[in-house]
Image: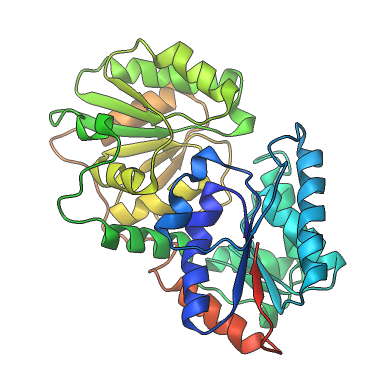
Length: 371
């Protein structure tokens, strides 16, 4: 199993545990693509990292990072025989691991397969990475019917895929079970949020939003902060361009809490307290419906149309007026406007189903590399 970012840890943590419960030998490669953002997560999910990458953060360009990871993963694949290499989603680590595995004839299992926007530029470069992985993978685990249908349209055989739901729901359920009823947030600023304010959670980090789109989103949040009945809570991404713009527009705004990156449990706590979410994150689109939250998606398109079809999400892009009006609509009244519709991304049994299929498909007792 190979991973290198915060979302990959969250979504592969349950798969790693399920494989081990099924008796599989699992090796884990950690590329270190997100170092600070992943703080505490590996321990939280009880993952034993057996191999660590290096020099990833020293590479300034995406192509350089990609090449370095390919070399490091190829070294592991040549040193030991594996039945499977497991990758998740659409990160540079996942795409590099799939490329190295394909070129070394190691079967690839792709968790969260089949997501598509149809536009290689949005999200960039993730749409390219996920298509690349689909071409190389042997076994595909689409989370929903729509993602399964995307793969079928691309000529991938139904016998090589299993629709399982999204493992982020497994992770969320696990996290909530670890948090006691009287959970006290790790970040004191979260614990000190005013009880008489409606929490609007915002997460922003997409490359394609950097520039005017991000500034327009932040202007909308600044306007909303002046309403008086809300508090805007925004965990700041480590990307210096994003962070600098967020601080420039919101640091002196009233009723705004700018936080450093959060521990996973604290983020789940915030989702449970929020009235709505403004986000350009893919993972948050999957997590929020478990809490009944309606969210505004600050992107032009989404590879998760299920969140819109089920009524949980609305695409607003960087439209100032759509964001302001949308948040005000969802924070009107005396209580959050929560939906009782089931989360379209699954019920929390995806990891067990993935592990069962992988162990059944394994031709030998050779280990699985989680990458």
